[in-house]
Length: 322
Image 1 (cartoon, rainbow, N blue to C red):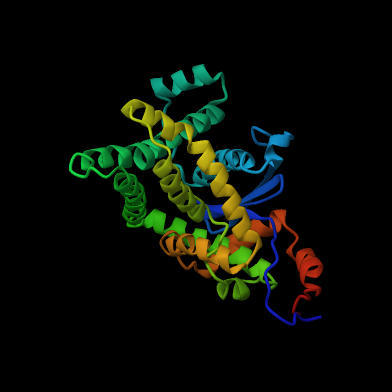
Image 2: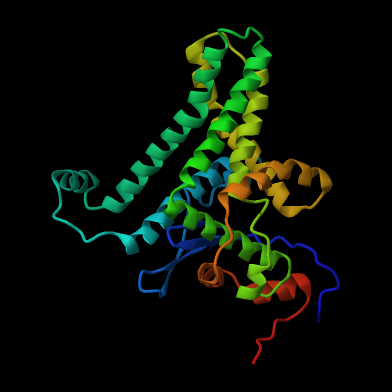
């Protein structure tokens, strides 16, 4: 049976680009597919249970978003670690630092480094995209006395710094390829959710922009922070820094609900609030080549039965061409 009109059905799968590959997650299962240096595709399939696994907190609106954000960060770093293992240089003799890390971690070096990297990455993001814009706005505040205008300037600076950061890293060859795999990830999900069989040809003609993207989530975080910081003000400089840090989970929770809604409906108001995130994705995604699409398809098929999804959601069965 063929579809009468092109509609979208929410699939529930999501993922991210990794070094020369794509990670896809469906419920508790995830797969990382990587194009190895010899051209073959390696796939790792496993279960992931985050910090709040089994807790009812993950079902409470505006709170669940905090845990989803943490899960994405942890699983993302774990997937990147797996993909980069295929491209590591020949291991040299362990240094004193390596021996020290091994001693502190008691043999769990990979887990220790992943946790440490997560903490450092989060601290870096806070410093660059939260604290730095505030510090710059304080400098501007010496010349502009309108507090409402300063609050808006701080938010605009945050967005400008983020966009400049994206433009800067996109000059790197490896990052450009990462953005291509990011595009392949989106195109696969769009292909499925639009009811098309998951083939290289169909994926290639699908959009590389998706409303449930992490790039859109980050932009939502920045826009919502402008609104909250506009209305919540205190006189103490130190207290303002602390307040911005304490509000990060609140902002993440609100942002998650918005992006979750955006991924499930095409209502025109939702399209309007999703538009800036889609514009940003024109920077964070690039058109992939067929080899990259094949890797993304392999990742999807390892955790998601797209043929069954097409049958249940769109009412037709896919038949392989002979």
